[in-house]
Length: 408
Figure 1: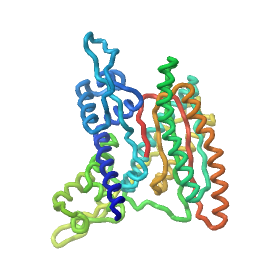
Figure 2: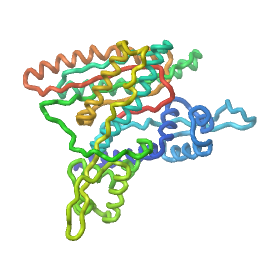
Figure 3: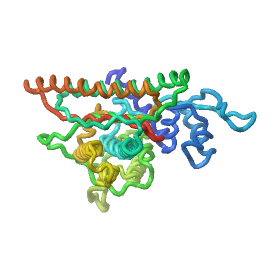
Figure 4: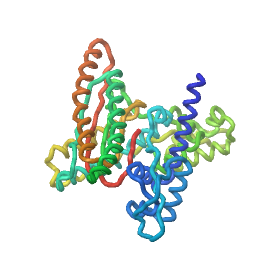
């Protein structure tokens, strides 16, 4: 490994460990997401978003500030206590996975995280669709387009989605500056962008992962945090994505400086969190050794796409939402959703003025012409022997509730 590559690899692992700080408690994700939109004090966050207590929220603020996720930006002049002001904080970053950091995660973890994020996003989408339909809230209808591409076309479309993702946050900054001048109220908008691969039947793509036990009743990010924070857990799960293995075998081949007891403890922890499961037992002398494998996510048929409201049953927007959800489930079950490190899935919550909203929606409206051009070029290359693939691009912008910002 070249020195420059080794440095980049270390920095990406440091990024994972820093993400673990945010993922360790679900409320920290809410804090970082909300404070990336606006400045808040712990007290105001507790009053407007929630938490177990002001004291507990303040503790989370302190941890996030210590690890560089929050910074102090001033005092809250709106405090109702005479002679007292609350410290305001802003988030320095969003808890997203860039492509290189994403590639470090074991395949089964990426797939489970994608499914968790999609189901959470689908709830917001359904609420936005119902709100736009019944209350006339601002929205750009969901579109779901299948494209025939090759690797080069895929790379270009994904790069465009990444550029548009960054532009969304630039528009939020510009909207804040404009609203300070004009006094215009900002709209809380949810922006969805996806680009993922459908299964290729000729490849016979299938998951070689195990059906896990029931997932523990803790928030999904908190299931992830131990893997992001611990290199040994990360290595165990990575190897169990590739092959079945016992504790002793892993320790012998990959344990490095860790003791067998430390390895066994990690296996137990990963099992408790339903990331791995026993798939066989092998007799060794007078005892049996468990053989372990990584698990696949459980994809439920129930969810926000089920039990369609009567008022939406015959509408085009609901048909699109249902078709989009079905394609995501199909790709998750087959394993193609995360077969590529550079797929795109983002759900952004931002505050925009009318001009910012129109620019974001304008970028979405310009994307179909761009993708059609890439598809035509890809078809010509495929006709000359290129390998085809099918990308699904999903796009929408809706008025949103308080929520998380996700991007992988």
